[in-house]
Amino acid sequence: MQLLVMVFTMLIGSMSIAIAQSDYPNKPIRLVVPFPPGGATDNIARPLQIELLTTLKWNVLIDNKPGAGGNIGAEIVSKAPADGYTWLMASVGTHGINLPLYTQGGGKLPFDPIKDFTPISLVAELPNVLVLNPEFAAKNKINSVNDLIAYARANPGKVNMASSGNGTSIHMAGELFKSMTKTYMVHLPYRGSPPAVTDLIAGNVDIMFDNLPSSINFIRTGRLKALAVTSAKRSPAFPDLPTIAEAANLPGYEATSWFGVVGPANMPADVLNKDSVALMAAINSSSVKEKYLAMGAQPVGNTPAQFATFIKNEITKWTKVVKDSGAKVD
Picture 1 (cartoon, rainbow, N blue to C red):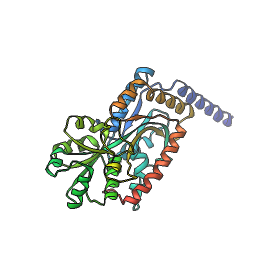
Picture 2 (picture 1 turned 90 degrees about the horizontal axis):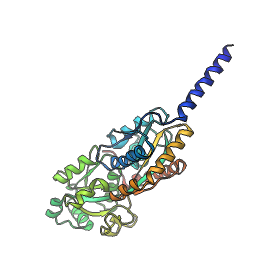
Picture 3 (picture 1 turned 120 degrees about the vertical axis):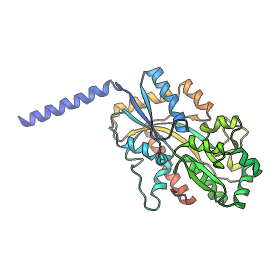
Picture 4 (picture 1 turned 180 degrees about the vertical axis):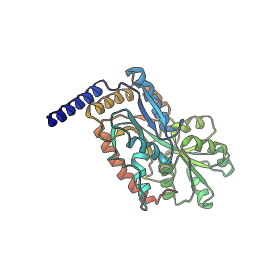
């Protein structure tokens, strides 16, 4: 009799889970953005939020949890229930760079970027852009990437390089640049791109390898001076702006950013499928595409399996970059 009661209880529990999943989502989904409002990661998340609500009536609430190069927000999601109601706007930092960067020298991440998450879809890719404070550039006659290299070599340690945090693509773009050009610039990590850009405009720091979306309007209005993009090809948003590889004759230099949605590990298959279909529809919508292209980002979208492979390849790629550049968490 006791065995029958246990079996009956398990069946009822399974039925309850199945019913709950069949009408998913029946409450708001929390999308954790591990960087502050106004930065590239946040700017990528907002159009998705609007499109999911407009076309599918999915209520997605953005929750900004900045700090530690995205690790604080990522850890929150890694420990959340795997019911589909908590997502992370993952990035090349949280799911590519941070593992080799933070574990180099015996450190440890508070999560495993592969084992602790369920990949749902890659969302967008974009280049970083090398921007300078205009007064710093004018005072030191820096009008090209080669001018910056020459100045940094002649003044080791006198150029301050801001970033959105340790381990971000902004940080690593700068570290790769320093390594390949044999220059020494002081890294100043911030809690996200917006405060770093604010200090850059104010002249409190000199340069930054910022995500294009968070600097694009300041470049257009002349409040920041752009020298080059970090991608292998020129950006359609600024076709006259060279790549760093071509501007400074640095073949192989490339440091782009990407963003995607992941959930906690072991999400139910039917919930994962619904999330995947919904995100693909939103990414492919004309509204989201227009907003991404306007900010210099390229909409992507792929399957959970494809995204899982992509993440593994990114970790392999950035492990080599971190090792070769000698980058470390300051």
